[in-house]
Length: 116
Image 1 (cartoon, rainbow, N blue to C red):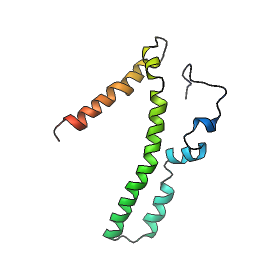
Image 2 (image 1 turned 90 degrees about the horizontal axis):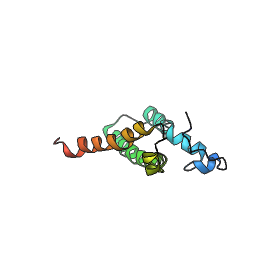
Image 3 (image 1 turned 180 degrees about the vertical axis):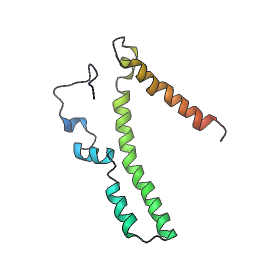
Image 4 (image 1 turned 30 degrees about the horizontal axis):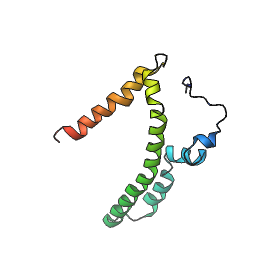
């Protein structure tokens, strides 16, 4: 992974850059829910009621795991947005504009404006 010019701050430690802590961020970003999912799949009965309850529990669990991840990702991506957007020396400007402006507009159009 390359370091974009201007983002390296020598006085900041890894713990200060992380959302919770480096270890917890790694578990959340690396699919740590599999440590919970495998025992449930292997040891719970395959009853329709149990499957529906486990599904609801995982929707709730995914909500608590994914929201901090996405919030932190958006913070990293959109930090100093206008500085990056108007900086003529920013090397990833075209990719940044595509991923940060065009793709969200297209996704909004697909999911909210098309009659599905």
